[in-house]
Amino acid sequence: MRSTIDRDTLVRLCERVEGAQTRAYAIPKLTNEYSELAMADSYAIQMALLERFLEQGHKLIGWKAGLTSKAKMKQMGVEQPTIGFLTDRMARPENSVISTSDLVHPRVECEIAFVTKAPLSGPDCTAAEVMAATDYVMPAIEVIDSRFAGFKFDLESVVADNSSSARFVGGGRPRYANELELDTLGVVLEKNGEMVEMGAGAAVMEHPAEAVAMLVNILAELDRELPAGSFVMSGGITAAVAVQPGDYVTARFQELGSVSVKFGE
Ligand code: 0L1
Ligand code: MG
Image 1 (cartoon, rainbow, N blue to C red):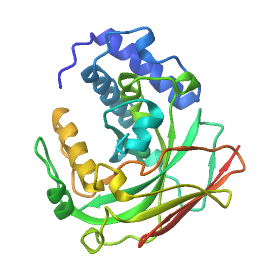
Image 2 (cartoon, rainbow, N blue to C red):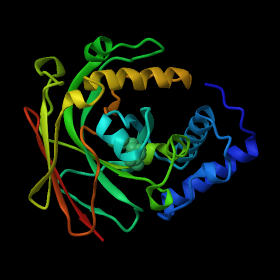
Image 3 (cartoon, rainbow, N blue to C red):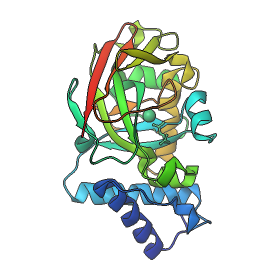
Image 4 (cartoon, rainbow, N blue to C red):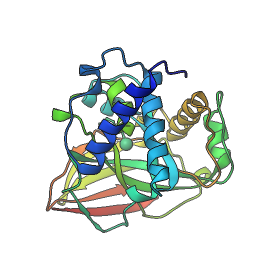
């Protein structure tokens, strides 16, 4: 994927996204000003943002696949999955209280996370290779946070905004992936004790390992591999659910236990 965006524009758009992420304010979608933004440019902005965070001492611990289910694509009006990076600063412990004052529009998703034991590389990575390279899977809640005003964006803008990555919580009961049927594995998402969403792993590209393979193939287009020991979230199984201070959320996964988190000011 080769970006043709000039250096000044790249830096300006990257700083705009960084400011919105780190100071939690909404910005207009990037394509309002820069209508010719192509997907390669958006990933170049995302990679520049990653480099800035690494220079500031953040550690890259893995990646996420986004917009991998039909429910999510329909909710957001887009038709293509994306990827984003995950750093140590985004991780939160199970049962903790996540502050919302440093987020713009927090929403939660329940996801199956993969932890790898061998490197994976594209461009032709398959779900079978992902399964063979997986050490274990675990349940996770992703807290996404689009920085775009009114949640109005297009795919180019959302990729530049690191696919709305903000926080994530892993937990429950880690299991060997090959002992489970990840496509028929069910999940129920509860907010304040009420069931709000439910689904099964197959909602994510027929099988969550397919989403991880897709992610590895996008990484190859960015001249990157997925190293062993990566934490990879395969994408929300259901539509995302908005949260506000005072809410508590539990994602109950068949075979994998549950993950809970609360939200505060
Ligand atoms: O995790 C994801 O599915 C990424 C979503 C990006 C769009 C959104 O903010 O909903
Ligand atoms: Mg997600």
